[in-house]
Amino acid sequence: MPNEIRLTPDAGLVLEKIEKSRQVVGIDELSNQTGFDIGKVSSLVELLHKYGLINKETKEIEEYKLTSRGKASLKNELIERRLMKYLFEHGSLHIKDVQNTLKVDKSDVSAGIGVLKKEGMIKIDKGSIELLDRNKTVSDELQEALEKINQHEPIPVEIAEVLLKRGLVEKSVRHEIFISPLKHGKQIKIVEEVSNLTPDLIISGKWRNVNFKPYNIKSKPRIIYPGKYHPYRHFHDHLREKLIALGFKEMKGPLIEQEFWNFDSLFAPQDHPAREDSDIFLIENPTHGILPDEIFVENVKQTHQDGWITGSRGYKYRWDPRKAARLLLRPQGTAISARTLRKVNPPEKYFSIAKCFRPDDIDATHGVEFYQVEGIVCDPSITFRDLLGILKIFAEDIAGATEVNFRPDYYPFTSPSVELSARHPTLGRIEFGGAGIFRPEVVRPYGIDYPVIAWGLGVDRLFMVKNKIDDIRELFSQDLNWLREVEISSGIEVDE
Image (cartoon, rainbow, N blue to C red):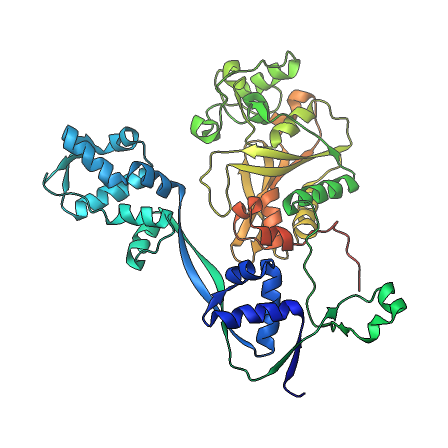
């Protein structure tokens, strides 16, 4: 029959439930009525819709959910309500004391005060908040809206927008399928359908009387995401393998470092701005370590004070061993290079991938935790041109950069010094790090009188350029789509 459509018993059951409802029905309701799981119901609904037996419409439904701040405001009341209660009881409260007195976030304080000022309920005089009218009360509208959201009840859009701006709720969009019966005038025939040809069907001859499910060669297979290394972790391993293949030895050092190794041994003066308490993470307990009982510590001291035998005039101050012994979280990987200088036997070359810590303002290219790839090459025949060649390998072969630039720079421990940068597709020119030849004031205290080239580059930024990432915070993202789809490889390329 031309209008006859063959359906499996399961598809026929779903169609029967839809037609009996005589109204719009959802996937969840069909799943409950048939006993099939939601995935199976969805597949059968698609089939019935394809045959023109039902109407199917997908709608976007906006939902609101309380954030952690919203839950706190639901439990303890909104800040404006709590502030008004406090003012009724105590008369006034200084703005600086609101956060600690009411135990709320700073942003909540600003929002609450803004609401009360807009309603003309308070005034602020010399930083003190005072009531203007004891007869006025705070509207219950927002507080009731939080309760409704918690109970999964709808609220007006304008109220939701206010709560969104204050960070009390977050909005999500879900897609829901609505199904309704359709007058189609077609004949429906329920037939058993077999998807697998088994030995029993062949031996018994039943295969002649069953309806085989057709193969849809255009259907997409299920995507399987196998386990793999985190892309950024994998980049570290690739970087390490690349340097070892180039003949470098790996050097390591502690995360908690002494200022001696991080600054003093690198000829950074003890009053350098980078050594201010606001620019480093100091350790509270213990606050100091013990300096090595070796001759090079005395050599470093003399170099700082008068230049010792380095040809320098030093910094002309009394070097303080107590400051040099202070403990801090390592702010630069060069501290590991300084530790290595006391045991080198040229010609040798070393590298490290060091985690570092600095109290920077977090933005697209800065974080308080970051990794540096650090390296030194100790060789009497080494030149500054060799250093530029090594840096170019990092930028082009490892980060995949195409526009690499060098420009003169200054560091207390190298001379001459150079900055390496490359062009990022969206952030523009991005600095990778710095490099140079260690000054005599750095290497002579260890008995080294030949050139030592050194560099320290940001691994995070190398990875950002390689993978065209716009924000350094995405390296630690929990975005499953990015983690699944970003390509990782061993770095081996095969020509087509």
